[in-house]
Image (cartoon, rainbow, N blue to C red; front, side, top):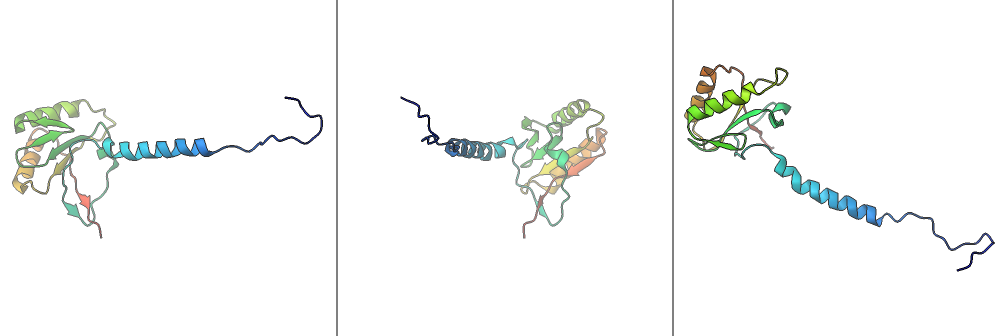
Length: 143
């Protein structure tokens, strides 16, 4: 292959963006698949309200979230807890692990099928254990 001494060359200096677009689309698909899996805790069908306030602390890994999908079923995070005594012990140990700068709130996700009395019993047990800051979780009603 000989080089020409003149100024005319057949070299193309444009950037081929096709591989970059392919990589970006693959990354987009990966993030779309992984994002729903990042939810912490057990999925519970929450009651809906017109104006629940959003608390960003509930999605943190350090948040103490008690899920009650059905009567007699208790989860702290993703862990199934058998019995209210074990539930209170688990909440105490999780609250002791929190830093002083972390919010000292116990969040309760009561499912739609859960009886009101069950949620009230859990709230009473948490208060008897010495934790007064309790947050009830609800979804926003879509218009």
